[in-house]
Image (cartoon, rainbow, N blue to C red; front, side, top):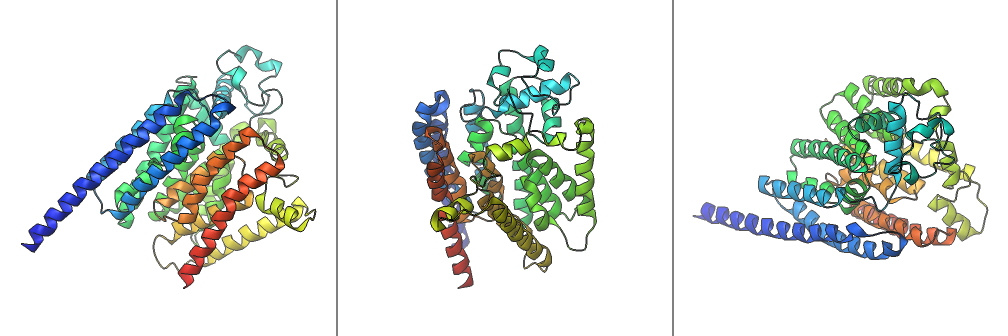
Length: 441
């Protein structure tokens, strides 16, 4: 009798959980349809208010996914709404970023047999490739070569051979998200976690707006990262190295994950990583070793990485101590911190649990983001997949608060940027310290 009563209670509980999750999903879907006609600076505050509502609803859904046992029904509901959220905005023009026009342009240039690192879009050599749909919307077209690494460039070429439309590019990026979702589900099952925890990634407003809405190529990097995490779980060293190199040659950031995925004493993973990096750069080396960096040096200067204005910790130190701390000294500090953390992760191979390598990846990725303190919200999206396994409150906050960077549309004076980044990183650091203290207690 007690077993029947327990079974009945579980059935009722699952039923009400499904109803609750569906209700939250419907409400979020409405929230994604409302801002699709937003335009320009005038609508950005209104847009961000809607994002706050989406975040509140998302937190409820994430809580449900973490508090329920594995359920195929909840997984199906979660994946269905994840697809609907993206379908609601994928056909609308990108509002938050115009980077996607460069993706299409670079694919077009390569299809003409031209190295994409050779000319800026405004160069007369590319005049025959210009049109009214793509070319006028390319940012920095008058002075900047492309900045994207070779795997990204090869992907742009393949995508644009089917269609050179922005909608198609966005749709393919969402397709890469589907690959990431599959990999996350496989990992969750292998660790014995409820598979519906995948909605922590697939329902996250940052991922939906930046990939379904803007079509950022970070979706491809995340697909490579999650596949690398899965390969590492299966002890496939060579494949792990290849996939991590693929992610690095899309966005560069994922290289920071190397010490977390490396297995001490194994030579296959590092050899595969280095070999893959070399192979994918080879087709583009006709412009020379420095040429394949594209606009990266110029971007570093433009974004304040050379003078140090981008780095929150450095800027805050300059303000607090009223001292002109050189950027070079800060970069030495960054190398020391990341180097020390990397060494600690590689030495600490006596893992307490199988999931420690994912925990290490989240740790070093989060530290990397604080030290770099980028200027754009989508740079934080690669942290989200880790939350499906390590639901860290500080990192949840970091991914939510990154939306504040869109307020720079209303003004990007150094003082304003410092305040916005303080609102992002100071609470994150405080929450992180509290979390460390509680664990030690």
